[in-house]
Length: 227
Image 1 (cartoon, rainbow, N blue to C red):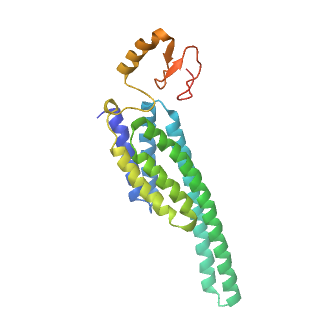
Image 2: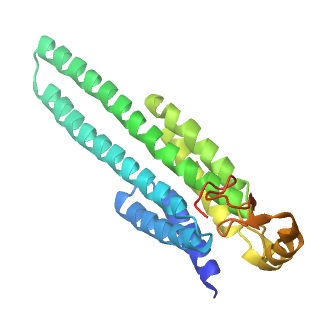
Image 3: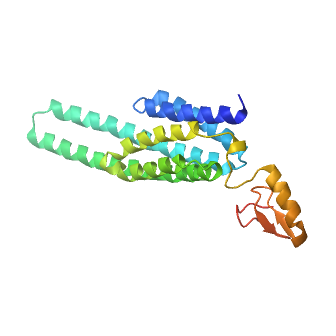
């Protein structure tokens, strides 16, 4: 099995495990690790380190968000347990109000970290879409974005969960590089023939993405990387 195939399957299985184990944090971490390894390999293949870096940044924000969720749930459980042990109506009411305030604060903080996570995820997924032409990456990114915004009302986490299923399909749908035209690059034969045909007019090509650049340019106007 080729390296590209291995990486795409690792990423797809990782996303699928995250989807299937959304309520199980331990198994979900395993899925995230596989996803990260697979995407890192794809990023190396496309020579775009930002794909992996943005995904790692998003995972870190997501982990922080779920730590906040776990701590908040633990505190709320203690508060409601305390309220069930007292018969004082005022004490029970005060405890419930405190619990609701903590819940509201928890949802706001969780939403913030989910939005930060998704912003990083979308950068990675958009880059993958540009390289592969697979539009399911865009669909997953959009669903993640809507889910992050709706986290504050609770239903957003369900959309984020479904986005990982679409992400798994996106990775499984990837084709061999020889059959998929990258947005940032071209096949070597096309690159060589284009270089030959345009050399007479003083044009060069970016070694990173293959786009035509002006002679003497130090940065590519297409991908922004140094030549």
